[in-house]
Image 1 (cartoon, rainbow, N blue to C red):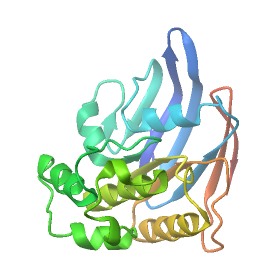
Image 2: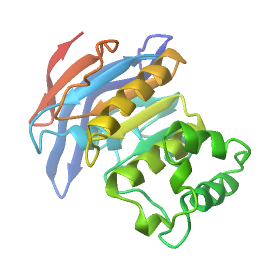
Image 3: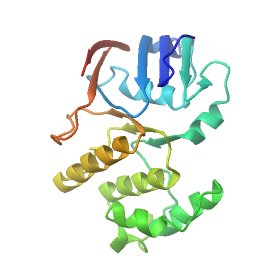
Image 4: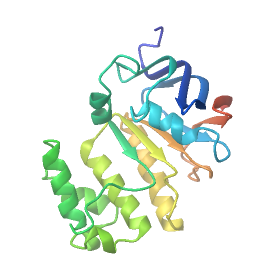
Length: 219
């Protein structure tokens, strides 16, 4: 597969079928390392399916794809999932564990250091909620906890599915600032969003999906 030496995502005529229905209908895409891209489109356009394909969470039905050096058709998708940071609509947390305990448990499960957890909780604004059981966190706070876990893992590719959901204005501003910091650190960020990123310091590439195809590419 031909791809740029700095490309972290390469898709060629990528199709994803579920029950014979095409969630993606032949996507062509290159994402360069250290860039920010926002995927927009109506509900059902394929935004989440694109992120799930790139994250190794759904199988490639036809076409070709490579993410972080792993072939989506023949490579180790479990290894790919370990390399990316995924924020979906629901965080995978243990409700009876505290915010900090969830991070400690997850870090130990993947042999990640726990010494940075307090700093990460501070960065996402959850220091005062560190000892609170996850089941008592608000939806917005649970999304911040999901971001804390990604920060702890330090992946080179972030996949954020509708990250503005359940965030208030303060949370949205925080998210924009965090994304800017992550991209400046050299990571690649792919976001699905109905709303544009609001920070004037962010100049993302905007990909528009419709019917499982990329129909617009700006920036």
